[in-house]
Length: 226
Image: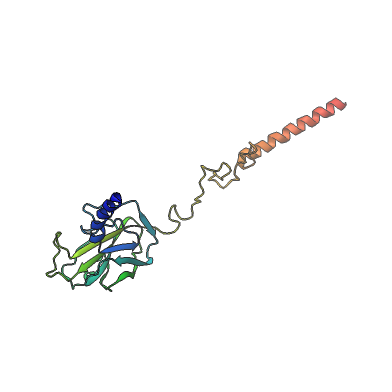
C-alpha cells in the first residue's frame, strides 16, 4: 500500500502540469512547458510518423485542463524553428509560412481535432507543433517563464509512396535470391541451379561445344561398328 501511495504521488505533478496532449500524430513527449516542443532542450525522438507529402490529416489533441484561449498548428520542414505569437489576437498564419492554422477556437471539454494540409514536399527532419495559448492570466507575455503557452510536437517524415528507390528501378533485393536477374545488358538470366548458361555469347558457345562433342561421339560409334 505504501508503494502505491508513493507511486501515485509521483504521478500527480506530471498529470497536473499537463494541459494538452497531442494524440495524432503522436507527441514526442508528454511534457509541454518549454518552447518549442515541451521539455527543455527537446530533440527529435524515435517515434516518427511517416506521411504522404501534401496529405490532409486530422490533428487530434485532448485539452486536459480547460482554459480560455485558442490553439495553433505549425509545421517546420527541417527542424523546429517555430515562432511565438506576439500577442493573443494576431493571426500569425498570415505572416509566418510555417503556421498552418492559427486562432483555432478552444472548445471547452476534451478532444479537439482540426484538419490541415501538409506541404507537398519530402522531408526527413520535419516537425508538427501544436500550441495552446491561454488568455485568462493577463497580461499575455512570450517570456519563457510565463504560463500563457503550452507546447506539443510530433516528429514527422514526409515521403512519397515508392520513393525508397529511383523511379522505374527494380526494387527486388538481389542479395536474398540467387535466382534473381542480375544482368544489365538485356540477356537471359543465368540458370544458377543448373550450373550453366544458355544466354548471350557464352551460351551460344556452350551450345556449339556440346554439338561438336555430340558429332565426335557419333563418329566414334560409327568406327566401332565398322
